[in-house]
Amino acid sequence: MHAYDTKDLERLFGLPASAVRALARAGNIQPVRRSGRLHYSFHDLVVLRTASALRAAKISSQRINKTLQELRSALPEGSALNKISLTALGNRIAIREGQSLRESESGQYALALEIVEEKGRLHVISRQDAAPTPAPASALESDNGSEFSTGVSVSRSADEHYARALAIEDSNPQAAQKAYELCLKADPDYLEARINLGRLLHMAGRLAEAERVYRIGAKTDPFIAFNLAVVLEDLKREPDAIIAYREALALDPQFADAHFNLARLYERAKDPKASLRHLLAYRRMMDQGA
Image (cartoon, rainbow, N blue to C red):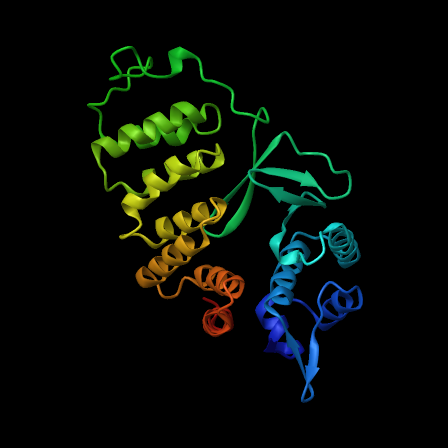
């Protein structure tokens, strides 16, 4: 449990005291008063962070509390809200389930959208179908594997492959993946291509492949190490994810989201001292505007 006053919470999460009180009255957070100060569990802090993000997306406090109450009542006994990922979908609240979104009120899946986590933040992007559409053969490699039908060959520069991949990500993600692979073949140290290829593989549910792509660059770039940790979490390998988040912090000690995610994972791992250490680091960075 961690002690905070209303000013602390407003500084950390941008939540006014009235919003925090509303969450407490609804039972969505359960602070405990000790020695005249309110103490919040890490579960409470995750809920506060979620509520902050939804309020920033112009979702009303009433709707946020109603959704959280409904989710809490539907959870199995002993489960907690901090294991559910919520995001704004226009003026509605959606539940993240893997790479899909389900509207909290209707229960319908948002088939025209895809959700991706990049650098610790959720992004919603358009897509044509719920499942990837196989690219036509003409858009992929020729029989000898050396060239696209558009004439983009392996011998071209890494920059040219990267530019092509970036241009066709939305219209043909499979061809974009191939172009990023060619870019990395031409220049294995092309970090932007590695980040984007890993993201596309992650979005497609090809987690083991995304892990392999990220691992090559995880020792040199904090964002790649962070993205690797997110993939490892999705693979249910939380001890490995902790190592990857720590590698991200070794490369960039000011990576606030890595501190927050480590605090969450250490809390689950029953290591409150480590959880508190990273939570305090996150709080300090938010105070400094990191």
